[in-house]
Image 1 (cartoon, rainbow, N blue to C red):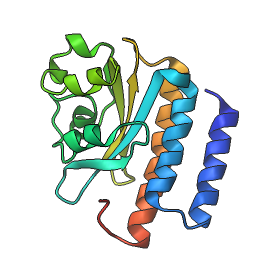
Image 2: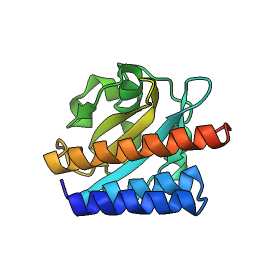
Image 3: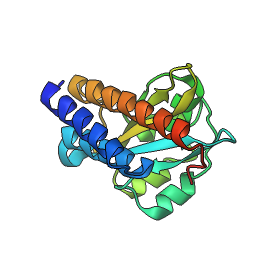
Image 4: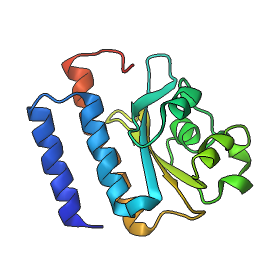
Amino acid sequence: MDETALQRAHTRTTEMIGEGRTLREILSYLVGEAESISGTDAVCSVLLLDKEGLLRNGASPGLPADYLDAIDRLKPDAAVGTCAAAAATGKVVITPDLLSDAGWKELRHLPLALGLTAAWSVPIVGADGRVLGTFGTYFRQARRPRPDERSFVEAMAQLARTVIEGAAQARPAPIA
């Protein structure tokens, strides 16, 4: 993992918190940092669990509004996609090829329409062990995440956890 990039992300995240930036702004920054590790091959997204236990967009600047609308209020489910499965299980879920994965049967048309053919998701787990959301990555080619990508995104998910928990303590409010 690129320790310099990780330290830079940590420092900038701390600065953004001090500047009073919104949760969405900070999560969008973390998403951008994760995307930079993969170059133009990846699109990242943070989904957050709302008070009803449904996945809502936390920060997905690289995904179009119609895609986000289609997945809004997705219920965590171990048999659906990667983010819903990671939210349900609390484990990393990797789908190297959306076309051959049964978990994507109902949803695969959405990322495929954008030229995205693989996905994986890291659960964002709170200090109390509850899943707070997911840090998902889509790829433009069928593949698994490289070790450096996986390590970096897992670190970004930990930073996201810190920000999400801090925002909840500062002012408990709906995410959408």
